[in-house]
Length: 285
Ligand SMILES: Nc1ncnc2c1ncn2[C@@H]1O[C@H](COP(=O)(O)OP(=O)(O)OP(=O)(O)O)[C@@H](O)[C@H]1O
Ligand SMILES: [Mg+2]
Image (cartoon, rainbow, N blue to C red; front, side, top):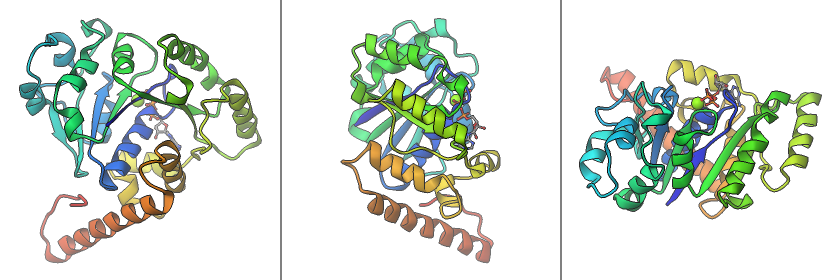
């Protein structure tokens, strides 16, 4: 099982978007995925359309002592989503830095519960900046995905984040900076060159283009890899990115095939539901 934190000191660079799309695509391709919303804006829970659960990250940080049994917590905290095999632990509305009593809270949850036996991936979405909340996620994670828009402002804070991770003895190979929102302009190319020079060991080969469908599916509560699989500009790049980041899991053709097969079942079920007037969950089954 891999535990991955989505980080960037900068806000609005695609942490939640990438976490959500990656989680959904991994689950659609057959992996068991747990998302942890570690951000009080609970954007990831919103994107996955999961209401805040009775037990959530606030309880984990405030109430847990590392020796307790995690089963009752997980029973009340883990929510299912519209995509089978994709679950989520939500964040409460009032999650704050000082809630984090122990920086090992997330690490203990993952190591001392059944999570590692059940899931293939745990993806943790974080709010911008580095504080105790992110620190707790970082200590629990073995890999770090850092989306960055190709804009001058995006470089602000990136150096500090990478230095902070290095100070925690995290090796470069665990840190992937993912260029995002490429508009194909001269300026984007220049920024990419600058990023590669600054972080030669961390930049992914795959660059995610600007894609208006990302916001469209977000506002309509749709699933990019099911509802816009063949029309979204970013999907082929996200598939490339996943195979670049997880080369041992699948190759590009295999991943494409698995997702396309799930999508045709998903569309088929929706058509059938429309024909018969039966209301079914819009899921891939
Ligand atoms: N490749 C892309 N193309 C078009 N829009 C994008 C792309 N990536 C992200 N966005 C949009 O950018 C906005 C910010 O993205 P997102 O919320 O994922 O950022 P974030 O880093 O999680 O922000 P925060 O720091 O506030 O949590 C969203 O409206 C999202 O739809
Ligand atoms: Mg976010």
